[in-house]
Amino acid sequence: MSELTCLILALVMWFVHVLTQGAFAGGALGIPFLVSPRDQKAEPQGLLYPRASRALSNYVENFVPFAAADLGLIATGHTGGWGATLWIVMRIFYLPLYLIGVSHVRSLVWAASLVGLVMMIWRLA
Image (cartoon, rainbow, N blue to C red):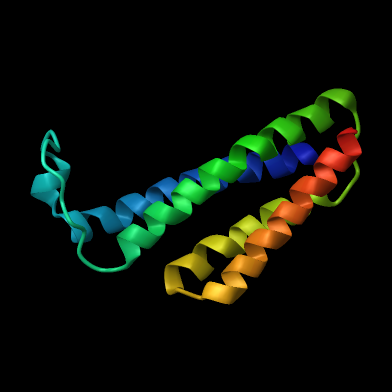
């Protein structure tokens, strides 16, 4: 996959994360809370909304360096490596693994995505 394709897929995955979190918010927090000014803290019910929220936070933390490295590769013409592809494929697997609670495999998938990021940075160097 090209770096541009991976960047587009990474943006799609951001939307998937946001929409997944939103889909679980109503059941976990209640619609009255969601339409309120949220002055009071609500305790979410269930596991899926908190997991989706943590997965989104993790994605955002990892998306920023990915986007920087990917745009750097695109701008300098240092393309053709597998780093961006590895990163996006692992991030696609990460969300469902987090939602269903597969701890160790999820951590390995996250580590593999970091390997992809290091591969991208290496090509920039």
